[in-house]
Amino acid sequence: MKTINRLTKYILLAAVSVTALSCKKDFNEVNTDPIGKSSVTASQLLAPALVNVLSANMVRNRNFNNELMQVTVDISDSEGKVFRYDVRRTWADYTWNSWYLELTNLRDIYTIANRPESLNASYKGISLITQAWVFQLLTDVYGDVPYTQANQGKDGVFEPVFDKQKDIYLDLFSKLEEANKLLSEGKGIAASSDPVYQGDISKWRRFGNALYLRLLLRISGKAEVSAQAIAKIKEIAETNKSAYPIMENNTHTAKILWNGTNSSTSVYSSPFMINVRAVDFRTPAITSFFIGNLANWADPRVNTTFGVNGVSRFGISPGPAGLIGVPSGYDAGTSILKQSYFYSDAQNAGVTLQTDPYTGIIMNCAEVDFILAEAAAKGWISGTGESYYLKGIADAINYWLPTRFTTVSDPAFTNYVIAADINWNNSLPLENTAANSSSKMQLIHLQKYYAMFLVDFQQWIEYRRTGHPFLQKGTGLANGGRMPARLNYPLVTQSTNPTSYRNAVASQGADDINTLVWWQKP
Image (cartoon, one colour):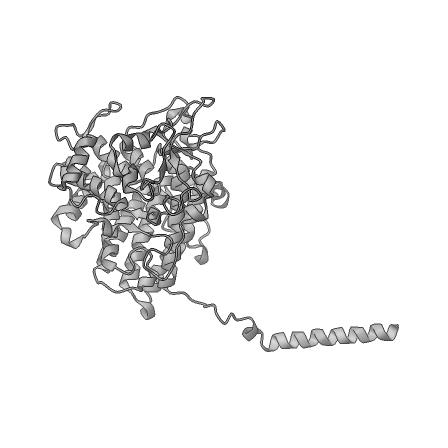
């Protein structure tokens, strides 16, 4: 027995020795992935980063922005309902983590495209535009955020400082200026790497300058930078247009078409299909505010005649009494009957927003129209604002129903505007703060609200800037009936970056949803 045990030990020892020697002999060859790569190109980073950011935006648009901005109501008497302004701290984590994660990739695109062996001005420009897009979201949602030291963990910066929002905005303007110059060189990129414009650099340049207008308008009310912002808006829109091309029609809209319809070799699936169950998609009721206006206007987007298979383009299921919604902000304990809601794919395959390839909007042409309408109405650029306003309405509708109205002079469009009673009225005051009163700003921003349907947090951010459109405040609202002004910082930031967090709070104000960000403050 002892002999057998001793023999077994010798065999095991020999086996271990052979294994050790063989591992040492060809360790590198055996442990090198023959398929994977140790480096990456700018073209490989772009699409995944854009898809991931847009997917996070759409998820939060659906269950956060839409609830705050009276698109939908997740009917329930439980606590923590966003439509009642009962915003829990945990809402802050998802977008913060998603945006910062992908900013690493978007910044790396610039670094890679700036190397001598892979130099490409267009990828550098696109990197700057997409960084500006994501950082704009971060600072408008949270206020002061890590910026100059952000995404530098690999360089040993584990506790980045929080930059002031003003400084972030001014640097974003520099990024967009540089991007405009870089893209003017017209350097080609791989069409397959670009899920937005399929390699059309001229459209990326238009998007960058359109985003520039959005940001300039957002800070135009701050006295310390107002004159410079207004002057730049005029330069881009009027006095130096050839140097700053912007979006002019829906072919310029920045979007990712889902489900393989983007004419590329890649197939990108809508997050509404991946992250939202069919039953959850159709659960929220549509509000009386959102659907009421569309119904009163006989808007083509909710007219089944212009939809697919008898379903409206917005994929809305009418309530028992038709296009009827529910009031937002109602008191807990009130008996509310769910009326209209958005169809889910399980109900109407192929004709719902859940599967619609056109829901992946980054920024659309109609928003640019309404930016220019506001600038004209305020006297910053030529005109009264009417032509831009009407074009914005037409472009917003035509995005969902291409060629529904050929031009703003199309008799069908004129008849629609008159019948809907949404025509421009130049005799109205620019602003009237009385509830539900008429003004040019209310006209513009009510239509802009519908143009920005599904576009990340833009309805909420613009409401915080302007107070428009007028929203009826229900008696069941929490937070003293105040629209949240920002999201708080994620809890993990407090524990992993305590010094910078405390400095940010000391500078900006208390870390809660009612603290105004820089451009909101008087």
